Every structure is written in C-alpha cells, then in structure tokens.
Image 1 (cartoon, rainbow, N blue to C red):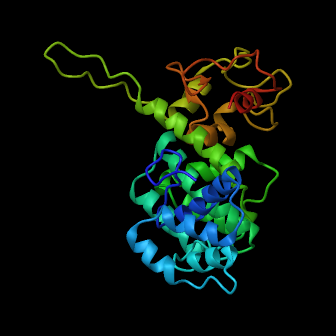
Image 2 (cartoon, one colour):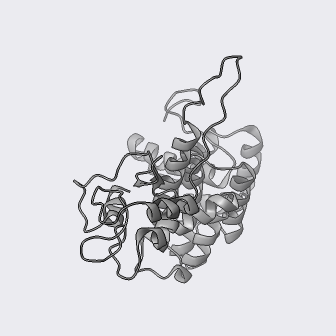
Amino acid sequence: MPGTNHSSAPSFKSTPLGVRRYFEELEDLFEYASVAEDDQKIKYARRYVGAEEVEAWTVVDVGTPASYQTFVENVKKLYPGAEGESRYSIRDLESAATESKAAGTKTRGEEAEFYRRFLPMAMFLQKAQKASKHQVCEQYLAGFPDSIADRIRQRAEIQNPTLDPADGFDLEKLHNAAKTCLDAQTQTATAPPPPMRSGGYAAPPPPAPTYGAYQGAYQRAPYGGQQSGGYGYYQNGNCNFCDAPGHMVRACPEVAKYLSLGRISMTPDNRVAMPDGRYIPRSLPGRCMKDRVDYWH
C-alpha cells in the first residue's frame, strides 16, 4: 500500500460524496496490493485520513471478529448522506436549484455546472422512487431565472410535441432544450457593438421590427412570393410558414410563437429568417419553412 504522501494514496474529504469515493479508491488499492484480511483493510482505511477522523474511526464498532464491511457501514453513519439509501433527498435538489437561481445561471457553462451537480441526485432519487419525473423537472427549471425557465419549458414542449408537459420531461430533454435556449441568448449577447458616430458616442440601433410591423409588411407585399422567408400563401393556398390552411403568414400563430422563442428572426425587409438573420435554406428537409427551422434546431 502507498505511503500517506504518495501520489497514489487515496484522498479523503468529509463530504458524503468524498466518503463514498474514498472507500471506492481503497477497494481498488486493496485489489492491486492483494490486501484481503479485514483487520488489515481497517488499518489502511484509518491511515489516509486526518487526525480528527482517526480518533472517531478508532472507536466505531467493527464487530467480533473484526469485519471491514461493518467498519465501513458504521463510519458512513458518521457522515449523513454517505449511506446508500439516504444518500440524497428532495431537499438536495431544492438546495441545488436555489443556489443556481441565486447565482443567475444564464450561460451554457453555468448550466453545465448546475446540470453536473443536479444529475446524479435526480437519477438516484428517481431510481429510489423518492422523486417523480415531474418533481425533478420542476426543480431543474427552478434553477434558472423565471424568464429563462419559461423559455426552456416552451422549447422542450416544441421539441417533444407528443409528450404531456404535466407528466414532466426526461432530464436529458430539458438539458438539451436549455442548451439551445442559452446558445441563442449567448449569440444575442455577443452581437457586435453599434457603429460610432463622430463625437465618440454610439449611434442608436435601428428599432427592432415588431410583429405588427411584420404583419404590415405582409399586407403591402404581393402574394405568391416563393423565396424562403417570403410572404403569403403557397400555391396550394396554405400558410407559407406552417403549411396549414386558413391563414397567411401575417396571421400565423406559429410565427408569433417562434419569434418569441428566438427560433426565428425577421430581416430588415420583414421576412422570416433563421436566428442569425440568414434566409431559411431550401436545402434543409421539410415540407414548409417551419419544418426546415425545426430540422435546423
């Protein structure tokens, strides 16, 4: 077995996760060093921890005769949460979500850090039937500012139209929805600064086209335009965006919805475009613009 200062010596942290990992590392070392006797395992387990731990670990019950398994079980009882069945509770999810929201989680990197912490707790609680999919879903969304949580929920509903939101989503599906939403937000946040006027101050940006202006552009435009992002109806009389009958693009509820979610944008001439301003490529598969946008995302 390695010395206490050797690079291969197991490291101990007095957290539930740290305790579990410490004993996992010991098992690997015991196998490598062919340590089989229980009293020897107990001796080495005490070797690599601090003075305070040694004092407590020396008096824990090891059974008669000494049993390493009994020793490990009683040591874990000294660290709430280190035991298998009581490892996590729903309060751990709530705590992680509260801390994430308080930190203002709003970037891909911040979400990834939150997800790495949240995932093992959620999977453990669901497997132990101590938390439902709906509870896990709600606690994950609670880790974001309300406006971002709403966008993630809407995005997940769009990506998974056959699922009932009331039942909750798989955590991975919410994670994927969050990545898309936060990617779009990052692209917006890193947009180039406005041009400078003579005199050293920034020229005000042109006003963003509103949905009302968008509708007006459609009213002024000729029908039948077939460029991707164009106006009016397809030749079959259906909406140019969603291919549904009974309305034009200017009255399409899907256009309004996709604009609010950041899935599409409008060009300066008020045409439907990709979030980065490019026209929707006709090379993408799909029977209408909406299908091609969904495929791109």
